[in-house]
Picture 1 (cartoon, rainbow, N blue to C red):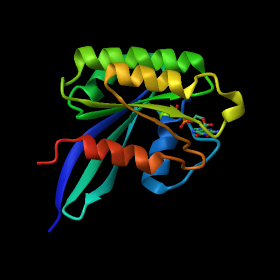
Picture 2 (cartoon, rainbow, N blue to C red; picture 1 turned 120 degrees about the vertical axis):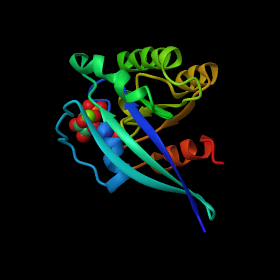
Picture 3 (cartoon, protein in one colour; picture 1 turned 180 degrees about the vertical axis):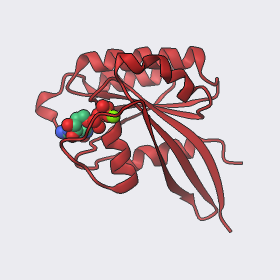
Amino acid sequence: ATKTFNFKLVLLGESAVGKSSLVVRFVKDQFDDYRESTIGAAFFTQVVPVDDQTTVKFEIWDTAGQERYKSLAPMYYRNAQCAVVVFDITQEASFEKAKTWVKELQRQADPDIVIALVGNKNDLTSRRAVPAEEAQAYADEAGLLFQETSAKTGANVGDLFKAIAKKMPLD
Ligand code: GDP
Ligand code: MG
């Protein structure tokens, strides 16, 4: 028999870094170049098999990145057990914004929250503005999981959620 563990997961990060695209890739294995921007927040679920006895079910809140929705974010991260903070590897400013989200989570969210930092759009290597080593060093220092992904190609998207699932308290 397999045991299923449910966890609330919130996606945070600047607008247009690919939060919605990552969720759609993870949940539906689809990508589209003209995704409409998220209004408020959207809800998805997806399961991740961890081993033959254990399954994790993520209840995913995909938030809107725009400033005007910023005041709503605490509502989504307050009772989340995991957070995925996304930046775009071609936009230095989105990495700075991601660090701001991490600090806010570390101050205001559940002290046991599992945080993953994600550098998305790593298919756009020729336009890279944030070195992977720099993001990895920051993640190590701040105690975060780190993964570079591409919602477009699907690279590392499954691995990201699997790594988070494995870090959750499964007992
Ligand atoms: P959100 O505002 O953070 O939810 O970002 P979206 O998911 O709406 O994506 C913003 C734009 O970036 C859209 O045009 C997507 O098609 C594009 N995009 C998202 N992920 C990737 C990716 O991994 N690679 C590339 N090349 N484009 C992406
Ligand atoms: Mg969105």
